[in-house]
Image 1 (tube, rainbow, N blue to C red):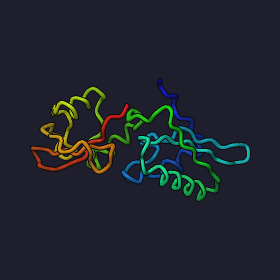
Image 2 (image 1 turned 45 degrees about the horizontal axis):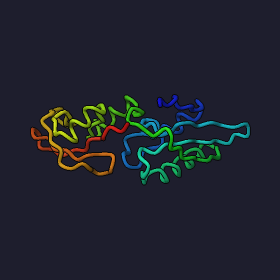
Image 3 (image 1 turned 135 degrees about the vertical axis):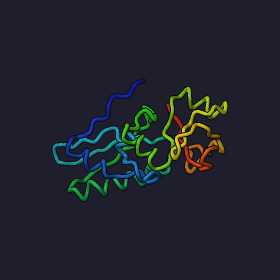
Image 4 (image 1 turned 90 degrees about the vertical axis):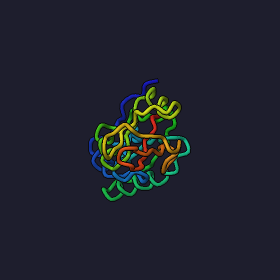
Length: 167
């Protein structure tokens, strides 16, 4: 099932784009693609729907509180709803978000097929965000969070997280 594009009221986009992902502070929740809709009703009340990056994501409560705070600072009262279907996918990370991940030192997700080759078959496809080498190895299936894997570059010797492809 292909999800429809998120519906965000234009006047809310800039507010929500300033809310950071608490686990990856260089990304906004808009860059992560977790905001599925943000609408304003006739009483100027905002309802925001968010989808977790995975069903057990501990950051969703913090994200919900941060959304309410940001909207309150802009003069809006809001409700935040958790939407589980369709499930979040790394395809929802924006191009800007992928660039920010790399600049921050996290390798952005590959395709689903490449991800399986890397995580299950040890292929060297994940480029090091520091030196760009693909002479990298998986250290652990889990990195600093469950949605990332820990890698090490064999050229520059730096460890780094790889954001797993989720479909």
